[in-house]
Length: 367
Image (cartoon, rainbow, N blue to C red; front, top):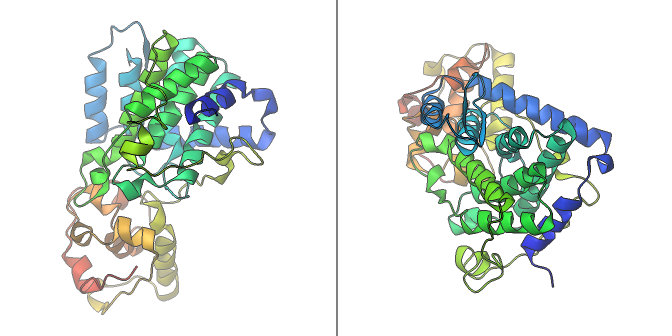
């Protein structure tokens, strides 16, 4: 019986631009433009600047890629990390909702870096993005690593390796090794998104993308990785999932998973989108709201939303921009005052939580 890594590798190696429906190609183009747009918006943000500064120190690398928004180059994996931080930092890139909610476009910087290395044509880049999205989505459909205390970026790591490997021209054997290496080194802790959120919240996926690219580069040069990496005695299932197992859903069957991703309207955690819209509709009906005249705000939400953007005490008194865009109380309280644009969400640094607590009262723990 074929291992999961082998199934992924054989499918990805056989993927061809000619077999992609026109609507899939169109969505790839949209996701790339969307990712580049949000990356440009975050260009001057501190974590992005830090990543870019570190990357510039590797400018002499022979395996290099462009730092987006500049005329500078850096070692490809460092460029991937810096560009990935920019793509993810505002929490404004696309979303895929399943057993695990994640952002497949986090893999795009890895694919683009690989394309620069290989001088790949546009068709190959599109194949790489489709492959990355498909693998990331299939893994998200199969199992929620969040339930085991792991971050969803585990899957970004693996998908990035596949997408980058596809663009580098890896055959099935080398793609399998890229998956083996990426999976073995993918484990990231969910603490990234618990409590008071740090800069790393917007950078963890970029680190996963970077590792996926690096795994593909190693396999490109002939490196082999641990196998069977999912099913082995000390593999992903037994160690990371504590003995749980899953069957990988079929890849590229019926509808490509990129068609099930969604582009965001607002730069906040995806499960709060409907709450933002509800708050704005209230403003449309009653006009500008004076917070001093609000007696109580009640929000009914669903379990996943509650666990991610409500339950932590820090979400009721956010002190960082990263916590604010993952705080349902703050997002709803702020939305009526952000009708004119995105600046309030994007530029928040220190966010006073007193108004949140006063408006909502004590957290009753409803999910």
